[in-house]
Image 1 (cartoon, rainbow, N blue to C red):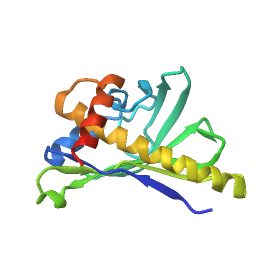
Image 2: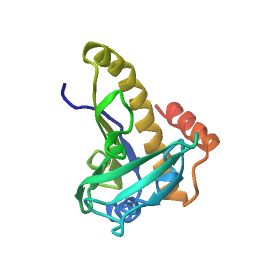
Image 3: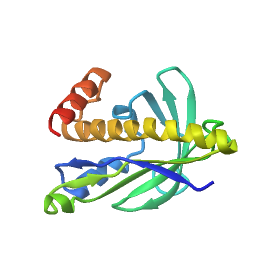
Length: 175
């Protein structure tokens, strides 16, 4: 099976250089990724290919995330795993892409954040069927991450589930 992507899009009214300075700090994601309560950097290096972190989820489970690709000023791709296994057994490959660029749809003002879940399901036709349900859930997740990241970058305050609910309502009302 080929890799599939669930991609979000969020405008951040900040210059890309400012967004990149925050994004490149791999220890901050617990402030805006729903369900993540803590981040621990596990490697001496703190950025670039090979950097690894442990993410603690709200339910207490942990998984590792290792940077597989890194493009200064633009973003990175992280592999989600538990040791040498994929983070969730339904997947043969599972990544998250953090990508930013100048927001040309807004006349070059601000930054566009394009969060993406990149994955490949296992288990043949059953996995493909589950993949359709997973894709819809991932589209919601990347949208939530984008909204929460923008809020955190603008305010410097951790985004609570209650605040995310408000952000989603405001986003829906603006459409």
